Amino acid sequence: MMGVGALVVATAGLAAWAGGLWGWKRYEGRINALEVDLSQPAAYVVTPSLSALPRDLVKAPVLRDLLTADFAFYYEEHEDRLGLSGALRRIAFEHDPSLSDQLLALALDEPSEVALWADAKGAPRHWALAMTRGALAKALQGLATVATKDQQLTVIGELKTSSWSLEGLPVYALQLSSRRTLALVSQGNRVVVLSDPGLLFSSKRVADPQATEVIAGLISGDSGAQGVWRRYFGLGEPGPQHTLVAGADLLSLGYQQFFPALQAFRLELMPGGGPLSSAVRYRPASGAAAASAGPWSSLPGQAAACSMLQVDWAQTRHLIADTARAAEAPVAAASVAPATDPTQRNTQAAALRRMADVFDGAAGVCWYERSQLHTPLWVAHAKGDAPSAQVLEDFAHWLLPASAEVQVGDGPAVSARIRAPYGALRGPEGASYQLRMARVGDWWVFSPDAELVEQAQATLDRRYPSVADSLSSPDHTLLVVSPGPLAALIKRETLAVITPQQTGFRQALETHGLPRLASLGQWPASQAVLQGKPDAQGWQALSWQPLKAVQP
Image (cartoon, rainbow, N blue to C red; front, side):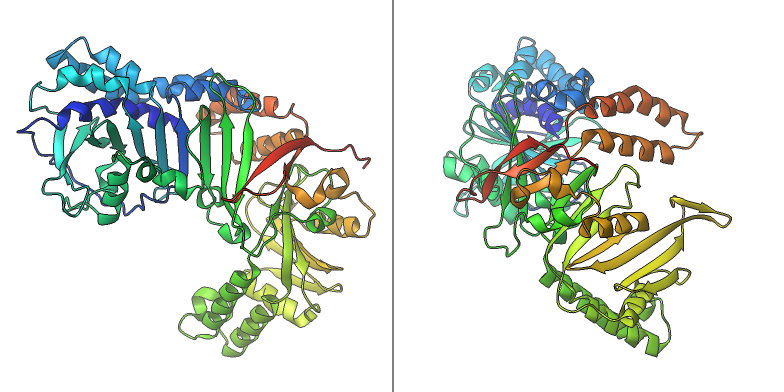
């Protein structure tokens, strides 16, 4: 993420002299409108030096065990950066050979802001960079009267910074390769670089009004207007440190209903490396508690990793109600309910509505080394009276494939055996899962691994230690991580999905991945504890504290 910004910040200098030129070639490449809201990034980086950021991350605690020097070298030797460097050197060679190295060095050392957005696959590959050139502008003054045409540097269109502007600012395209074209716009001593012209322009080369407003603010001389990304994340003026922020949409991977209160996570470190500081941002009036001791007392101890979940049950109930209505509709029923008989569909829809009202309050999830990565244990606080065994059975038949062997027990509880690849259970008919959902006291417990549910029942009966027994502040703990068991779980699960034919993947994993996991596994088990009260913008500091020793 940070390396992408480092690759392109050097292009900022081109816009310093491009604005004074006439007769530019028009950009003829195809533009795919990305329809990205430039005012709401998925992630954000502000740094005093983009070139130093990867190396400083490698020096930070924990990260230095996960990253290697190759991490920094990767961005220095990245295809896009090499393409950018080559383009700058060629332009400088043709017009002013003395400026190329100076241009690149000065640009990469400038304070910069980088905002990132997710692409169609959910990866933060779209980005925009904003910077004040400072000393770089002086180095570029000699380029103001150079040639007016170039094969790689062309004009796309114009950007009007206000409704009363008679003329717009030229927006330039720098084509690095057939797969990468950057867009640049400059005003005064401010520069904005976009990873794709489609962040600003439609396929007809018309600038999007909302994107225009954001970029006009970024390149203005108004410090308030320049802070559009900082305001979105509730941040103040940039300090001397590197700041990296990831929004909830990016962190939750599409499961935002499990984290309705969470808005963002922030890491900070000083130039030169050093201790990391972290913080989380919550919506003050979200109605979901940031942390609660309840789930920790319900989850068995010796977990590899655990997280508090601030589930929005009201929103979940609306979603389930919509699904129940769809299950009753004959036309749509085949896609939302296994049953084809109208009576069965109505019965399952009624079970859905009943199950939508059995949860409230806090929830949590844990992964265990003895289980699988995709079979965690979930707990949620129970609401009201337990549903009948028939409701549980109807719900299970709606939820699971028709081939599932469903059994309803006391408690209430429902179990099912499902044949599927990668199942932990092995038998004559192949791999399978034995899942279980049960109400135990005031808690619902569920896992695709029935043994974890049984252990949770033992925990709630105080026959087995809970996660809470190892916490110093259960009421304020958000996360629990045991690096040793977590590294072992990730290693086993990763090796399980690599086939003998994938020798290249296995070799890469053994060379690069497994040593990093081994280093991670040496760190002590820790808990992330909320400190103090949130500030006016909802940011609250996190303290990473060791777990207490507990006898199993």
